[in-house]
Figure (tube, rainbow, N blue to C red):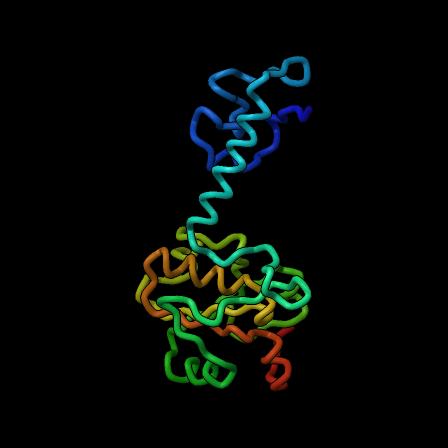
Amino acid sequence: MRILDINTKPAGRNCPPQLDIHRGRIDGQVSRGAGTTSKTRPMNQLLCTLLVILAITASGLPAAAADDNAPNGKIVSPETIKGVINVDAEGLIEKVVEIPELVIIDSRITADRKAGYIEGSVSLPDTDTNCATLAATIPATSTPVLFYCNGIHCGRSARAAQIAVDCGYTEIYWYRNGMVEWQEQQYPLVQ
């Protein structure tokens, strides 16, 4: 039987108050550590996990796990995202020239960014992307923004672009082919 560790922060923030394991409580009972257990604790933890999974599934965000239709079990980003304009490498360069206020967001993790990134881009990994972090990075919801990551087998920029749509941003571009195409075209990287 798994013992609740009240010093960790599992997905409890997404649970209803009666299942809030972040605060060390389950059904109003304060966890007293390893010495106490409850018959309802495993069921409540399961219910909480299922609620979080249901919320993520219902949100319509691209899945973080491998897709059954993906080659070799790899992630394949959707071809389009409603409310988002797809661009290729040349389209990205055109947008930078045409729209000086364009904010380019690198949705990759820090380790990937250290290997090189598109000049002028801002690092905001998809795992840190939400309405508050977007608002801190992008001046207004009407400001043009472009998201990219490692390419079609990287779902990070797709997730980030969908979050921007959900947060009310109105001019969103997505460089779906990302760093794979950028490097194939031998465009410069900042390191």
